[in-house]
Amino acid sequence: MPNDHRPKLGSTIAIQKPVFNTLLARLREAGYQTIGPCIKNDTLVYDSIESINELPYGYISEQNAGHFRLIQAGHKNYFDVIPGAQSWKQFLFPPRVDLFALRKNDKGWETITPPLDAPAYAFIGVRACELAAIQIQDRIFMRDDFNDPIYRNRRKRAFILSVDCSNPAGTCFCVSMGTGPRVKGGFDLNLTELDDVFLLTIGSELALGLVSDLPFEDASAFMLSTAERIMDNAAKKMGRSLDISDLPELILKNLDDPYWQEIGSRCLSCANCTQVCPTCFCWDALDHMSLNGLETSRERVWDSCFNPGYSYQAGGNTRPTISSRYRQWLSHKLGTWEQQNGTLGCVGCGRCITWCPAEIDLTKEISILRKEASK
Amino acid sequence: MSNPKPTVAVYKFSSCDGCQLSILNMEDDLLDLAEAIDIAFFLEATRAERPGPYDIAIVEGSVTTPHEIERIKEVRRQAKILIALGTCATAGGIQALRNFANADEYAKVVYAHPEYLHYLKTATPIAEHVKVDLELWGCPVNKEQVLEVITALLNNRKPSLPAYSVCLECKRRGTICVLVDKGFQCLGPATQAGCGAICPVNGRGCYGCFGPVREANLDSLSPILQKLEPYPGATARLFRGISGYAPSFRKTADALLSAHKETK
View (spheres, rainbow over the protein chains, first blue to last red):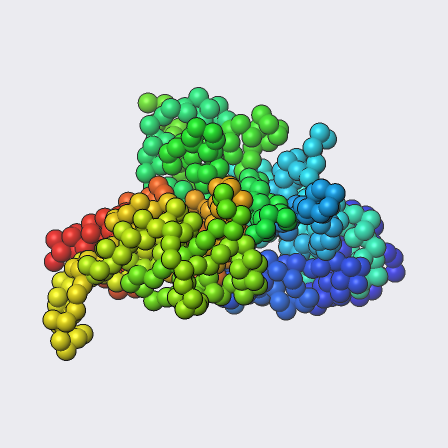
């Protein structure tokens, strides 16, 4: 490709799709583990990928309440699959992680802290909503007054290659939450997929170094306007919408509405919504003790406010019913979260809707609650 | 425990021995276990036996014969702590299917001379006969849970056993929901965790062998599973499986079956 100059920070370049393999190779040479969407055991997961051929080329995901199917649609795009149950959360805030171990010796208890030895991750294909979710978890785990060393270590070293969404799924509502479908910032590289090329917007010096000697051309005005058109179309294709104009007040002023009981009668309290949610961050600490009592280790695991044990305190459970636990979750996610962290806790990815076996749909529940409350 | 090395007796009632084998399968921990406890009676492991009383009795199997009714009372008398091991001991097990049928008919079909058999019309969990101090579910039990309970008893603390559903274990393992992703019937949302989500991890639905989770919302789950039935009546069969005699699963299966009859 004819170019006699190097790309600049903030600029958008176009590369031929096969060149993406060189970029992946560069990232790996630079010490990154490249993680992206791929198909394992006939389903969509985020796992290690080394080549563009491992991406779900030609696939789409069909999503609705309680329904997910991966479908080979025969198109010619690599990034048209809206993500499944997994999110980047599992790499930054791992579902299980050892915190420390204690061993008794002659002098007393010796503390063994495991090393922070997670690989440096390069996340390939982070959606706008997912990037917003990572930024929300940053506020939880990397506060000025408290920061989680495990999260921080992984997050600070992560390389983010984000992707503009061109083909939203049936449960998507990022437009309502103001998070997508276009990626706005916080990336190293942002990719927009056109028919023939990938557009790459360079968001960091690190990324600039990685792409500077790739064969590229400057994105033409035609390419940029095509990307604009794709984004405008995507924004119109949201499967769901959520009116947040009266949130969090709507929820916080109607905590005693009987409608919560109605939702509670359908909710399985299985915790799926919280586990697939890219912002939910509840955890539990489990102690594992040796038979002789001389060694013990503490592990952090994902937990959920839907787990009855989560709100169990001396004397009993403060949220003893399923409806009280559902209300806790939603009134936090779309209510008190704002007061605590400055934003709502929802990014509009739709995972909690897709992965709820009982098809509970928070966009629907909120609009019904609004009607019930106005009666 | 008062004694630094508690005596333990392991008993078999009506069962397949799989849960006892789970204890013997703890290869990595067996030597430590033998150091920490005094195995006084465990016929699956050794013919050496010492008389009771024992600090801990671990009981596998359900009560299915008149003799077993007497025997479990004696076990209880001999034990300070009685642990029901596995779903036969906690819910009757697969042999509790006889509770929903005519045991005499079964006996006639299977045995040439059923008159020699001394059996009860029902297979029932240990707790229906004597006081049980702790139940460990599973078909078979998870050996990690067995070890956790023994470790907790040795160290005078409450065992850490999950009170949530299998779904949480699936998610912690990165397993994608087979109910939503594949449309498989799965009892995971209503089943106690503890197995490590073995079945969904291997691409099939949970069949509830760890028994119903407390507060399982079966009124909601039942119609969800009915929509995914591979054949009519599959949901009732799923609830009436290995943990079918557990009260909440039993009630749900009964309701489904009587609704099925009415529509006929």
